Image (cartoon, rainbow, N blue to C red; front, side, top):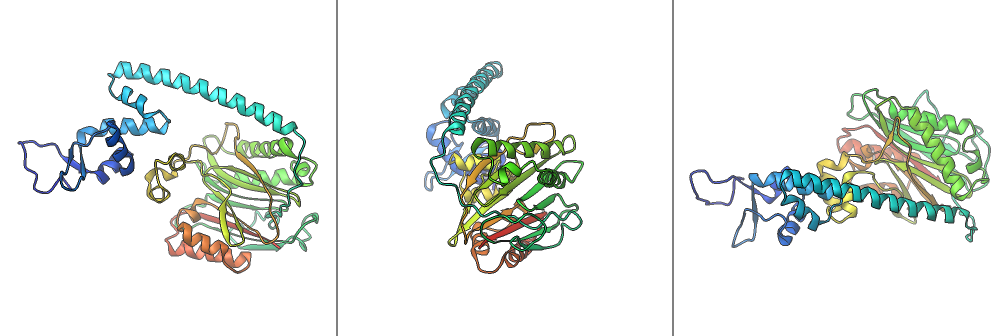
Length: 397
């Protein structure tokens, strides 16, 4: 579309773009463009007097792209308006000043959070121990990660018997339409994880989960898994293990990693990237993790809807991952799990290809873990399966 129907003008009228085309070209959304029009930050070049439809000129793209990038760093609209109205040298000075204040504000927030962590870590536990049934899938089988696996840990001799409910687990790992397999699955005696690697060396997801498996075998999680560690000490043990996983990566490589460490009393979730952990309880699906992506931040701030996010080109841009040579800084959470719950891990080759409603029906549906995992893979394949995919399903009986 070149502009409103029936436009006539001068010899060289500016090429007008529809709001949808302008949004895609600028990195903003139509919703944001309407907001910025109302606030006077980015006026359309022309508005249809009858329909109110907005049209934008190509010459407005540099300003729109500047606004989009400044919103990504969280700059308030009033300050963006100031920056956008400055010349290059003055704009640089304003951005440097904003960056310094942002660093100071972040340092203050980190100090406050560290103080709260210290206080809560040393506070007496006033709650009863959490009842969490762990997705303790089959022992790690490094010789065959492409096959389905299912186990009942109450009868499996490959690990110490733990008190608590029976756990049944199945995993599927498929290459999909990719030339190489970058996803990986860990199904250990007390630890379950999925990873989605990126990088030139390849295999970063596999190296990360192999490091987790070695950490479990070496007893680095024993204090957590047998209940001797709790609170901050338990979370610290998980962070130590993830640091080992990061150290196993090749220089320049990275991976997502979502892991569940389990024993009869609690479930600890460690997560970085855009793989996901889910809980199905009484037929209702709840996501236990937050995607570490640019798009998720925009959704959280109300600048994108969930539906818009599914088709946004930035949805694959991670802003946190497990990386070689950098500290492992996962999200950590502790959850109670009870008999009847189902725990599920997926990489984005699953939840990025199957719609939320369909995935919820599959995960909350009947069938044992193997049947559910198979149904998920079948749904991804029906959607094209253009990416690697991994899914782990654990039922607590």
